[in-house]
Image (cartoon, rainbow, N blue to C red; front, side):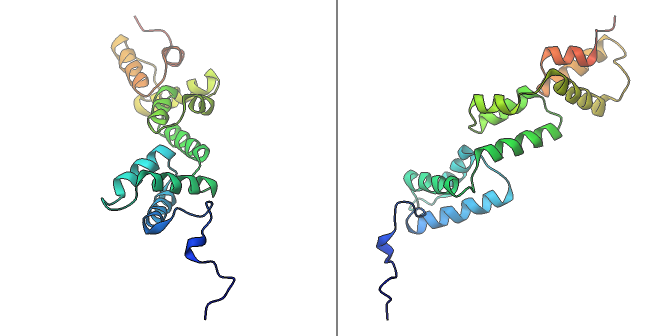
Length: 172
């Protein structure tokens, strides 16, 4: 006996999840990925494209899954940016390296700039902590040591102004 008020499978509205088995499988895979850590839209799109089977979902289905996840609040670019920046700050990375990582993952430059908008003192403190963790609290002993520390901080994504303020003048 079929209830008259039960919706038939063909009566799905445009706001419902991505149609078909492939869409449900992709949604389940995406939710599993998001349960582990936040992802940018671009990262998740790439992972879903790699995961689909040759006879599986097309790009339209993937885009529908991503739109549904964003609408439901499961996929959030803002949460991803916050988590990414927090993680990279914990690793001792500077603004240039963090910005490059965000942009690599499809985050717009303006969003990345807003997330990294801190005063010079904040970045100097981060650079000081990174170089102290690596080299200890003693100041650079000579010019070679100063250059070594400057290269380290530069590779971590700190700019020249922050490096000079952190390390001071080059020893003679």
